[in-house]
Image (cartoon, rainbow, N blue to C red; front, side, top):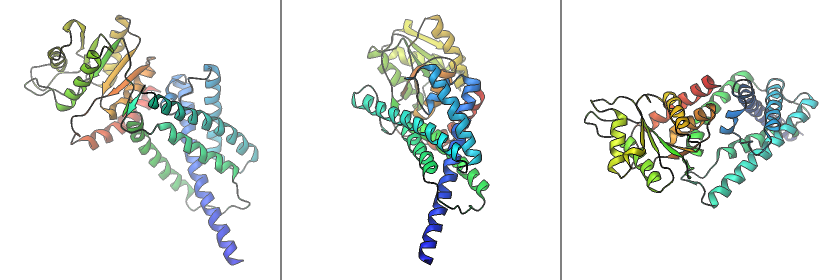
Length: 336
């Protein structure tokens, strides 16, 4: 009997840990959903779940329902039967959508429409998260042993999720190559030396962009950057490099005020509108592409991202990725 009791207590403890994790996940999803509904018109949900195959009105109501129910579940937990079953219903719908996103990703990969060095879509993480939420709402034990310090544990879990999310985006989304025929290519600057030569990072971006141009995927190349460390402006060096690689100078458009990601997107949005470009490819390093995609989306543009083919692993890559993780959250909260 004592062994049975210990086993039951252990099962209840594990359930409590799983419920706390599920409630933290639900709270994070509720935050995403309601923030997007209120300030971004649902447009930015695509960076974690893609509902574009649904009717826009249906997708809007689904995101709203998810935000409300997941938020209530995060606060109240599984004590109320009606809330549990409502949360289960919406989590199963989200699970189905995330699973459909996974299937579509691998179909595109198998068909050669996209390529990647990291064949794991972010939607797999969303699928597992929804499985956990659904399981917690179903597998409620008869008696419950309260967890110690649940609030502090929930905060720790939330911090871990907020750290993992941008890095997962950099690998799952950033390393996927979505190249396809477009009206223009936008290259984001990455530094020019005092003698006017490109940094290795920028040279890799430009080589990738030139490859896209020479393969006939676009006829216009927009180079965006700011002042260099010497007399040569970044866009001047980028344009010179492109011309030396066979790009027609008449097809190169400079954006000399692209001193940061937000400025580049704002400026190139105006340039793209002026040349009536609707399909655009953005070239940068993988860690940078999720923020580029998200910011273009917020501006109402659907841009295909292409990671630069790296000639070697950048020594400061861990620093760049850590900085980008902070920038991604800052842009998300500011743009929402």
